[in-house]
Length: 97
Image 1 (tube, helix red, strand yellow):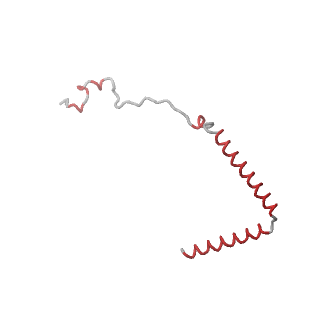
Image 2: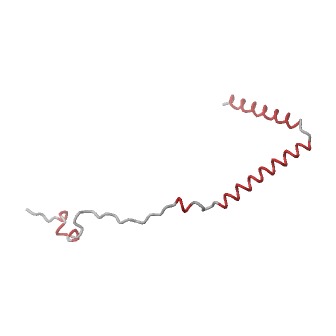
Image 3: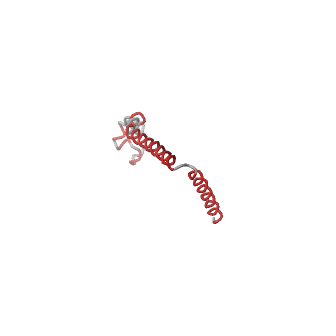
C-alpha cells in the first residue's frame, strides 16, 4: 500500500513539474488569454448542458411509459355458478357413499 502511495506521489510531482515548465514559458498576457478562453468555453458548455437538461425534462417520459389496463383474473374452478352452493363443494363433507 505504501508503495502505491509513493508511485502516485511521484506521478503527481512529475505532472506538476511539467505543467509549471510549460506555463512558465508563456508570457503573462498569453496565460491570461488561455485562461479566459478556457473559462468561456467551459462556462458555455455548462450553460448549454443545464439548459438542454431543463428543456428535455419530461419530454420522452410519455413515450417510455406505457400504461396497460387491468385485466380480469381467471376464477378458480370450472363450475363457477354452482360453486356458491356448499352442497356442491366436496370440501364441506358431503360424501356420496
